[in-house]
Figure 1 (cartoon, protein in one colour):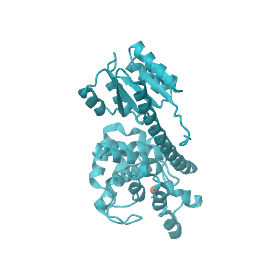
Figure 2 (tube, helix red, strand yellow):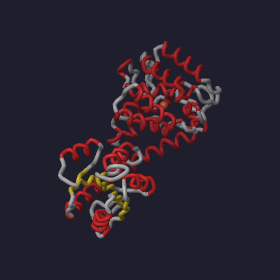
Figure 3 (cartoon, rainbow, N blue to C red):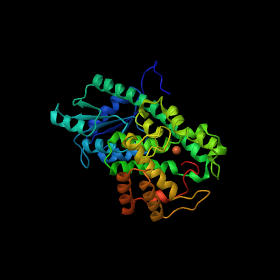
Figure 4 (cartoon, helix red, strand yellow):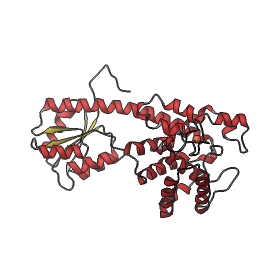
Length: 339
Ligand SMILES: [Fe+2]
């Protein structure tokens, strides 16, 4: 936990510069302030170090052999494991074009050489404060993810379901052209969409036979409960409609709000296609795993009944048949009573 009342801020800072003198100067300036510094002689080495050492901030020289600072920054920001690490680019001149390119590749801040000690420390401290606030948010998210996975873990038939859903609905969302924030939301929703089942008794969730009307009524509350659990997290704002509406059907026969057609958020329609497919192609207590062909055929019938989005299904079917969906059918089954 980061103290808000007692600076100084500390952290691990990666410095990449091919000029030893520059590297040593920055290392000296930062390590005397209590920061742990990891030096790298070029961009490739910086990326290697990033994969090995937990890093809080990266300072990159722009002009380096093998990989420029721009290229390294671009890779850092494209990688889900590192994109939240702030990056400072150090340029030789106050060069407008370099700065514009830096902004394009996602740099968080800039320093001009010769580096001014006070400016360096001010920028580093400010970015680290922001980083630690983001880390706290990440921890809250990870508690939610752990909770969601522990619910999944109670059911031996759902092993890996959340991960498959997260991975594949994000891929499908990309395929159908959803915006980046919706793709991120789907990745999260894939994991937490059934977190509301925490409030449903195990006897209902694990029941191998059909649910009674009362049990079914209770089961249908899980999307609303899940939405309530995730609501306090601001970063989950785009995830909430997916959680709430992942059991709606196009003809209005789903739950909890009996939404119809395009009133069901597009991202929720994407998630449910993958959810249904994963349920069909994996083992359940009352049925074996369907083959890909049988699963798609069953879904086609359900599209005909007015349950699932025909346009998304069509793209999904093409996607599956392209042979890139093998991992979806891998592993165990989806939730027995999650219909
Ligand atoms: Fe569900």
